[in-house]
Image (cartoon, rainbow over all chains, first blue to last red; front, side, top):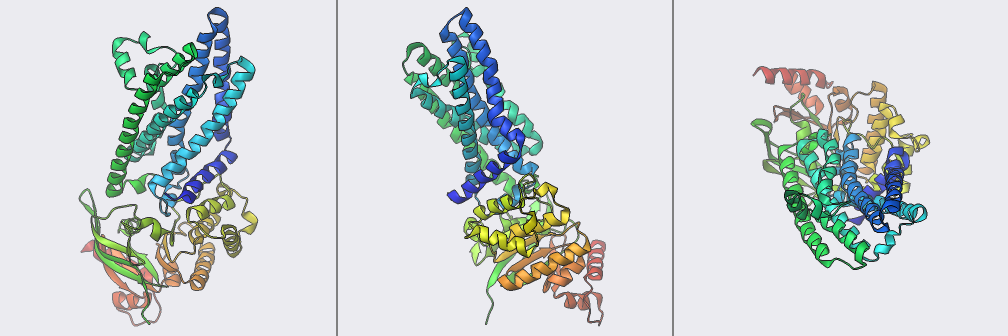
Length: 260
Length: 251
């Protein structure tokens, strides 16, 4: 792995964010707008019910944004090179596909850190929700979300490689297919039995269960954490294998150079 | 003294769903040589270049660049290779300077800013360094592409119709600049174009491809004499091209 080449991909996206307003909007304004909406809802619920339920909603929303933004960002970052008709220029350089994808993941990581920081500040200042009240467990939740989102992003890129760039917009919708089963705002136990079984196989459902457990008891839910880790390992390995198989196939079939 | 072989292609074959794009071609390029790669649309020129770049896997045959197998040493080899095509852009919203800086990092160019300044001066684009690619004319975009292609002082340069859809004045300037820099930096070039004048101007040797096969090769003048059976001393690749394409298609 050559870090200079990974940095080149990061630099390209930093320049892109500086020049394209929608990229800036995506990383800063959109999470703040979502937080504003859910912040008012949480404030309303707090008056009716309890502080804990309000925290569930705000905490769930903030962690969901991490997953949604990272998983779509990875696919979108790849699509930018296709839209710019630049992908062949990049791939004709000494860069390896692993370095290229690492660069794309790294820039998504940086962007979500910026988004998370702005949401953390705003939630604390305007809604008195201290995301840091989750303590060190927040970092562990965050890592699990990030890994699953990355696996999801790699899966999205694999779909684009296999079926072409016209499928790109579909990959931005895919994370929302997971949302009902991810138990972002409600416990898995309220889902119908079949949905509960599906939810079990989605790593982030265990992250949200763990978050609610921590907010309720102040304890860390090791059981949910380790199940999420195990599932993440399986999904990450699966997405990498799928990506490698598709890449080999499209280099053989000549579809790679037809991507643009 | 024998010149170093920079590129060696042996028995290259590629088939797509029963269609033979490259049919057992072999050729080589020596250091400092400029090879014109000619052929009608669909002859297999771009497919060959993509195979050289490692972006299409050949079914059979071998490709060695600087004596090393491309399929096994791609990253190492491509530090000293570059590519440009009018079909592909640099990212549109980035300025010329930003684009070249990104590519300088990708190719790990030492003293990148100095090299970029040098190339922008050479291509008379210094005053446009902060201009976004989208705001450039087609000709200036092609020049920016060439700057990118020359950033790493490549030993081997693959140019796939780099000046397509440009007016003759811009092509003439581009060719002269390329010739100048090729001489100064001893670059080996594989150059495809449908503009025969361009090839006559730049290429020392020409390889003619049709239906994936090499059907003629030599200097532009040799090809003119052999194919057209004329005794003149002026290369006429346009007529050679038409003659070879039509004869091959009829046969």
